[in-house]
Image 1 (cartoon, rainbow, N blue to C red):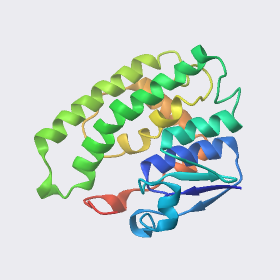
Image 2: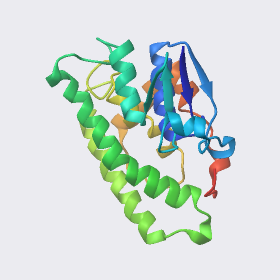
Image 3: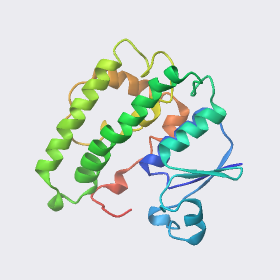
Image 4: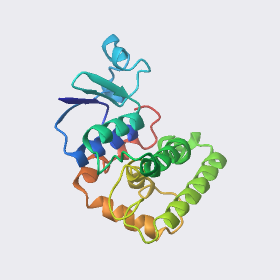
Length: 215
């Protein structure tokens, strides 16, 4: 049995849950972190010494860090669909996964979502927020160019490249910030909206997080 720890509103947990849904894996989900707590217990620290979610236990094998989990699940359960054995083919997803984690996510989740949406209005650093909004606009314009003529990031089928990038879209397109027109990104988002696993695990209402620096 696959067990997954992490609260449903966690961005990084949503990536993992979306892939679990796409793979149709039987699993047990344990709410942890934020208002659920439990991350500082000796039992949880034995699973992940960093005390963060998501964490999975796959029949006794424990993995932490969201992108490591994505790669593990894809390799074990999604070969041919989400995992390519040829290094050159696999690199096509890997590069977008790493870019999402090192470039897009810090600018959007850390800079815009936390700096603007989750920070009380009187505490916001407006110049810093404006800079991150502009950076995100450039990132999504880049993705818009990449998606021209494609249904998904790498072609006509959902791949691992779509998961970390696509998890951003629900929040990015539904908060009150200035955004450029990105028609190919918007069409991609509409395709993702049609996927049951995306609707269930990524399109999680987040209004209760507005103006809250706590969980």
